[in-house]
Amino acid sequence: MSTIFDKIINKEIPANIVYENDNVLAFKDINPQAPVHILIIPKIVIAKVTDLKGKEHASLLGEMIDAANQIAKDLNIADDGFRLVFNCGDNGGQEVYHLHLHLLGGRKMNWPPG
Ligand code: 5GP
Image (cartoon, rainbow, N blue to C red; front, top):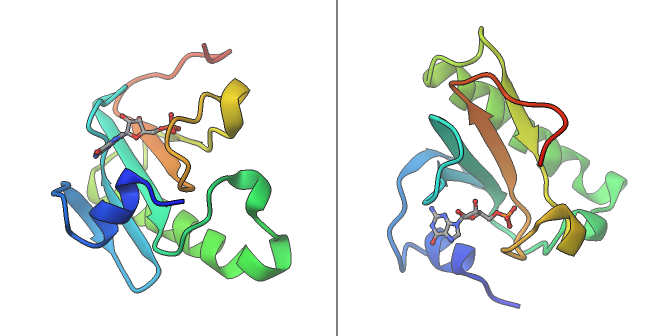
């Protein structure tokens, strides 16, 4: 099923893009929950974490982590630390059913999460 993130991938609606390669796109969250809040998404449609298969998607997931580390460096939050989050399904708080990795930083995170 198509989501708003497909439109961002296809540049049909604007987003503040901070990183892009052939497989991965990253852009600022429209409703940031921290001074730095970036969404890192695959360009192929994968709805959620439970649709991932380790062997098939290992390299894509690696690219998403590489992107997170590069963006954290570029935005100067790598040394202080940050949080990476996949929300999955209703109880996980997922709203957009296109896989995305939240990169949150620029402030001290709380634990447990809300
Ligand atoms: P989820 O709750 O599914 O893990 O996270 C979805 C995220 O997408 C939310 O943090 C929300 O603010 C963000 N979001 C939803 N629609 C848009 C949009 O059109 N543009 C951007 N940049 N972020 C969006």
